[in-house]
Image (spheres, rainbow, N blue to C red):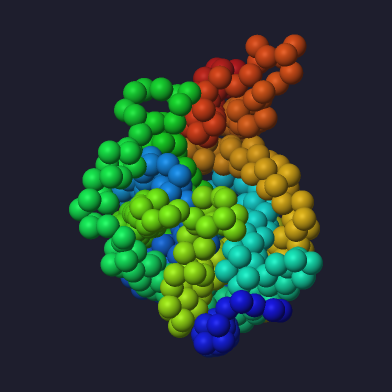
Amino acid sequence: MTSALPTVDLIILVLYIVGVAAFGAYFYRRSNSIEGFALGGRNLPGWALGLSFLGTYLSSISFLANAGKTYEGNWNPFVFSLTLPFAAIVASLVFIPFYRRGHFRTAYEHLETRFGYWARGYASVLLILLQIGRIAVVLYLIALAMSFLLGWQGASALDNQMLMMVVLGVITVLYTVVGGMEAVVWTDVVQTIVLTVGAIFCLILLLLDMPIPLSEALQIAQDQGKWTLGHFDWDFINKGFWLVFLFGIVENLRNFGVDQNYVQRLLAAKTDRDARISLWIGALAYIPLSAVFFLIGTLLWLYYTQQSGLPADFPGKADEVFPYFIVHELPVGVKGLVIAAVLAAGMSTLDSSINVSANVWVTDFYKRFKPDASEAAQLRQIRWVTVVLGVLGVGAGILMLGNANAVLDTWWKISAALGGGMLGLFLLAVLLPKVGSRSAMIAVTTGVLVVFWGTFGRDLPTSWAAFNFPWHGLTVAPLATFCILFVGGVSGLFERSE
């Protein structure tokens, strides 16, 4: 690999990656049981799980793209962060007692009790497929970001990106398969601290290096509408405050209620109190940290517009303004730390996706159909599946190279469509206890069809224009969830009357 990065920064970057891998492998002795590997022995402290929550919520995409959003626009995306406390209240009062009282290992075991194995299998398969896709997308986007940050250009760039994917995938799989859930959580703690320090340093540097007095700069941003959270009309066609707020509530309820990435951390906590502490640390800490990234974007806009602007060789995309600043404005040594922070955000997402998918496979499939499987057999299975899932994710990421735009667009649409019924199905199980299996299946089918319509039913041919989805894309998830609850409730009335 060739790189434009100074040697000092490269050394920092390599030491960081090797250090994370060694630190994760340290937890091998604590992962020699299925409970230890999958859930850290259900003995992890709330503060560490909270930082792990935060690390899972963030990613390399958040690190770089959130700044890009406010660079080219305003603070409307920050409304999503403001919904976290509302979702955390529901999770604290409903989800934590529900999951921990049931002593579950996955979020989907209860679905079989309520609706039969089809519901559990449906949710589990979707989780695994979505996590493989998530691994691929995160690896691909890390490779793109690192390509820019390390100065990879020309014919060798593709080979370097592929090598970066393989190296990161192998390192993440190794410490995950060796250390299990504890390795995931404690490496997340380190990586969350690194990315937070990196982001705060960039913010301070921007504030100190602003080419005009800060008060004047902030007023210019105010005059240009850069601080606004969006319009407050009840408009579901144009993206305003209430539309993002509604989407954030539904999406965060899905995260806390049915996404194994988060549920597994609630189950791994030492006590119910630790589970609540972890939830609130993750939810509340994300608000100021996301604000830091959004503020960096606004300050970058001020930094470059109040000078001569970006140079002619700048690629021209808002998401690449922050990487450009990192490469060209940060001092030697600090540059390596911040690039390590970008990697930290990505690796924190990767290890979580690999670990939870392996746990779901063993709990909801292997153990379900082999109830007499020994502890040792389950442990062997979960380690092998961890490796296989990592390989599949890396392979899918490599396939994206060269075809990225089409693949990413298609993947995001498919993942939205497939995952659209998961929150609604869970809420049916918890909120409407008299709804039966058949009604749940009808409701979920309806919800998935609504998601397909909202995702693919745009810009249809003229002859089909009457069937275009009429609202903004952010309405799809809330609409699908409402439809599942409504159809399930109504269908359940007829089911019980028969």
